[in-house]
Image (cartoon, rainbow over the protein chains, first blue to last red):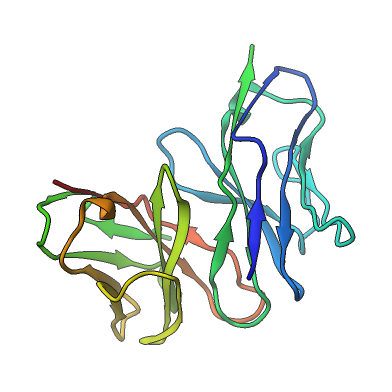
Length: 110
Length: 114
């Protein structure tokens, strides 16, 4: 069975500090990994996915198949980054079933 | 283009009743998925519909059901409501094709069972 683990429920950093949100997954095939973000009073939205290998709002995430990890990183956190972050995976194939981690609430302090 | 629209936004029902939630996907999207979000269990997959067919189902009792219409709009129904069904129900739509895996979420329907 597929599983996504986000070990930190809450994470606080100061503005300008680096931030890393951890995500580990278990899946026997080749999953597609995502980070979704939910800002206060807004809908859940895609932040980035591993296949596009791009940086969004200064965030990057590298898929490490050996460690089965997909950690989200940003070198200099901003107050507007405060939000709930969910790591998720889709199994290979045509179905669109997302398996989510439990989420990490990031707070960037001034 | 218009985003995913869910109606109603809020619902209060009593135990034993049934409820129907509606989701209008982004125009052109044929895949619609439903998720239940609770503080204790987080985001859990309910089911996915594609071209009016249920393509995948999560681990929920048979009281939870859904359907999709020819215009891709989807409804989910919960019968014999229990207090534990109180949750935020999210709908997401996706495009077709192997590359279109991004899920676009609605704002959700907040269901409270009393």
